[in-house]
Each structure stands twice: as C-alpha cells, then as structure tokens.
Amino acid sequence: MKMILLGPPGAGKGTHGKIIAGRYNIPIISTGDMIREAIKKGTEIGKVAKDIINKGQLLSDEIVIEMVKERVGYDDCKEGFILDGFPRTVGQAEALSQMNEGKPDIVLELYSTDGEIIERLSGRRVCPDCGQTYHVVDNKPNVEGRCDSCNAELIIRDDDTEETIKDRLKVYHLQTEPLTEYYKKQGILRSVHVAGEMNDVAAEIAKTLEG
Ligand code: AP5
Image (tube, rainbow, N blue to C red; front, side, top):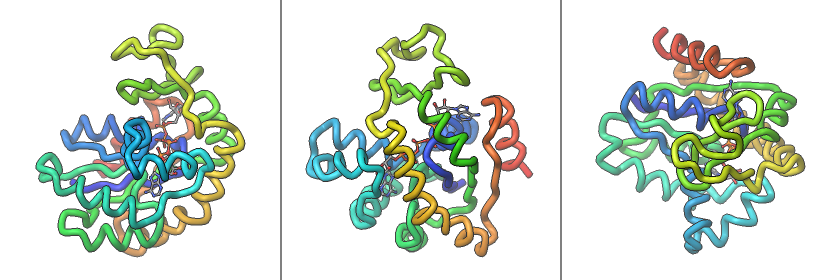
C-alpha cells in the first residue's frame, strides 16, 4: 500500500503514521524528520533548511522532491510506504505521480481545527534521539520528561513556538490544503477528524482504512 498522510501541523501524522506503518509492516517516510536530520548533520540542505523551518515556511519543491524520489527507490519501499508531510504543494503532488514508485493508492487526511492544533503543539514533547513524540496532557511518557524507549530527556521542537505554529498553519491552509480537493477528484481521499483521545482516533483511522 502506498499512502499519503495529509493534514495540518500537529494533526497526528507522525503519531498515527507510526501505528499504521507497524500494522501494515511498511516504512514511514517523514520529510520533516529527514530535514531535521540534515540540520543535525550540518549538510548543505540542512544549512539552508534551518531558518526556513524555524519561520514555518516550506523548503523549495526541488529539494524535497529529490529527497523523496531517492528514498522511495529503496528496497524497503517495494511493498509500499507511508509519506508523512509530502506532498505539501500541488507541484510536489504532480512530481510524486510521475515517479515510478510514487503513485499513491490512498490519501488519508487527518483534519482538525486551528485551535485544537495550537493546543496540541504547545504541549508536544519530542525525543531528540529516536523521534518519539509525547504530549504533556494527552500522551504522557511513563516518567515525566523522559522518553519511554531510550530514556533521553524530551525537548520542545524549535518550530513549536506559538508564533511559528500560527505561521505553519497559514502556510498549510494556503499551500497544502488544496491537495484535499486534488486527491478527492482522483477518488482516493479518506478523511478522519482527529479530535479526541489517542486510542479513539487510532480506532477510527483503522476503521476508515479497512472500509
Ligand atoms: P513536519 O515535521 O512534517 O511538521 P508538520 O507537518 O508541521 O507536522 P508535525 O510533525 O508538527 O505534526 P504531526 O501531524 O506529525 O503531529 P504529531 O504526531 O507530532 O515538517 C516540519 C517542517 O519541515 C515544515 O514546516 C517545513 O518547513 C519542512 N518540510 C517538511 N516537509 C516538507 C515538504 N514536503 N515541502 C517543504 N517543506 C517541508 O502529533 C502532535 C501532538 O499531538 C503530539 O504531541 C501528540 O502526542 C499529540 N496528540 C494528542 N492527542 C492526539 C491524538 N488523539 N492523536 C494524535 N496525536 C495526539
């Protein structure tokens, strides 16, 4: 199965994407994680990306398209994959449809209100080592401030400030939201409202994917 996860920042693409990937035994490819890794390693892309991410803007289509094109060609993608955070523009969607391995079978939209998003992202905590995400109220780690998997000290992402979250939402509505209509016209869009308890949302997603 080749799946795209579409949705505003903080809708739960990473959280639910990992659950779905585990169920179908396919990799999850997050362009956000790839870009953060490039920043951490200080690569040429990383140097360009740091300021852009912290302003809540998008990297150029050319850069992310190349990243994804290479990644979906890996052996572990032969049985399918989940794309988290790509495509984010119509240009990226068109490039994906032209990649041999890229044409999606299903697009799962996770939608939420801007108010819910701001609350979610303000409480998000992330493990800097394994990338696992938590929430101070809705998805707490077993030990406060520590990752359940690797015990690292949890951090707040640089782009999770209230001002940057609002900028990311503006960019989402302007540049990415039109993709819901784009994929609806192709008949491959399914949507789930992600407000509510983690387990309830996960169950609703499972039902939507099986239906
Ligand atoms: P990226 O890392 O993709 O960020 P994003 O799309 O803004 O999404 P997030 O990772 O913030 O949120 P999420 O939807 O994964 O939510 P999560 O599961 O963590 O991109 C970052 C930046 O990289 C972009 O701004 C851009 O600059 C650049 N970039 C990336 N891709 C690009 C592209 N294709 N083109 C150009 N530039 C690109 O959940 C959020 C929180 O909610 C967690 O704390 C979670 O625990 C909590 N939570 C509470 N209740 C629930 C529930 N019921 N379900 C799920 N989560 C819940």
